[in-house]
Image (tube, rainbow, N blue to C red; front, side, top):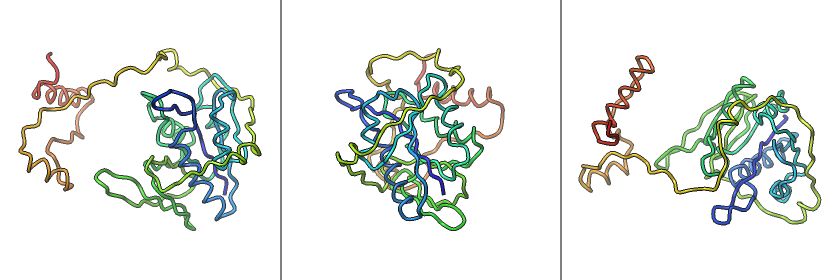
Length: 252
C-alpha cells in the first residue's frame, strides 16, 4: 500500500505565526498508525514555498521526510500529478486561514477520478478497502465503506493525538523538488490581506419558545424548510431569494 499525506502551513489564531496545521497533523497521525500496522509506504507532500519553517514541524510529528513541490502554479494540479497511482491519499478537511475554501480534497479527487470520504474521525483498513467513521452534527457518527484508491479528508475532532518530538525534527529533512504546474486561473481573482472581522451570518429571527428550541437541539427531527431538487438553477435561486425576503434578511 502507498499512502500520501498532503500537508499545509497553518496559522496561529492569535499571533498569526506560521505553524503546522492541526487538521493535517491529525491526518498524518492516523496515516502513521496505518503505515506501521500494514507496512505501507508513507510519503508526506506539500506544494508551495519550501522555506516555510512550519514544514519542519511535521518532521517532529513523525514524518521522516517532507517533499515540497516548489511551484507557483496550480497546487492542485501539481499534487494530483505527483500522487497519481497512490492507494490512499489523506489530508485535513481544510487549511487554517481565515477564508480557506476547503475544496482542495475535492479538486484532487476529481482530477484523479477516485472516491472521496470527508469528515473522517477514524479509519480501519479492511481486505476490500477502508471502513471510515465520519463526523456528523449533534454527536452522531456514521460508518461508510470505500474501496481503494480513495482520498480521505480528516475532521479536526478525529481520534488522533499528535506527539511533538524535537529529536525527530532534527533527524528528518524537508526536500524541495522542482515541479511544473499550469498557472492557477482563479488566483488572479483573489487578494491577500490581514484578517478582518468575520462576516455576519444571516439568520432568520427565532420565534419558537425556549422549550421548543431545547427539544430541537437534542433531537434529530427536521427544523422545517424545504429541499428543492427539481427545477433549474434559476428556479432554485428564486426559492432561496423568497426565503431571504420572507425573513427580511435582504431588503430588495
